[in-house]
Amino acid sequence: MKAPKHVVVLTGAGMSAESGIATFRGAGGLWEGHRVEEVATPEAWERNPELVTRFYNERRRAVWNAQPNDGHRTLANWQDHFHVQIVTQNVDDLHERAGSKHVLHLHGELSKARSCGPSERVYGLDHWEMQATDRCPEGHALRPHIVWFGEAVPMMAEAYPKMAEADCIVVIGTSLQVYPAAQLAFEGRPGVPVHVIDPAANVLGVPNAHAWPLGASEGLAALSASWSL
Image (cartoon, rainbow, N blue to C red; front, side, top):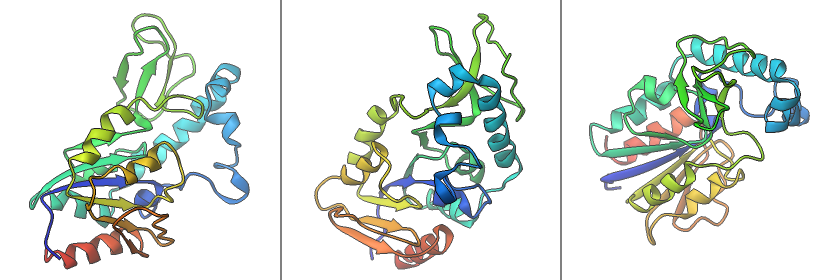
């Protein structure tokens, strides 16, 4: 296949699984032993900020100790050949640490905190442990910079036009069942190929889609080889 010139890559939890980052939910629909309603909603934050803070501290510590995998590095290396825009559902910073320059986070970033005040200003973190009593300079509570269930996904407005710029779309490590993010796979221009890389790859009616039933690193290596990279 001829290599593209402008690739948009949509990544989900399977992208970081090879780095040891737990996928969203395990057996029984629990997330690290917690129901989503206990740790990942605005109501959970209002009810028990200590539990929510502790939960995200553990997620953040895991990311702090993780390293980008071969799949992350492949995407960074693609930048030597064509433009690469990553749109990720993941809240880790492994794409950036691998060297990717254009990364849009749909669901927030663990490495940042956000003021609960009217400004909703975002602050970078240089440590993994937050306290439920942390305050921003204006005196408002600081919460994890994460889009919780029941909240809008503000970066979607920025993501839609990026999909339309692509001459190739690559979807990695996502079931294409978490909306609104999954809708992005359908937003390419007519005729633009969509490569879906996932061990349980299911193109789910996406036009011009090609399934690569492989893990992230192996699938990206195979796709790179098909482009003679």
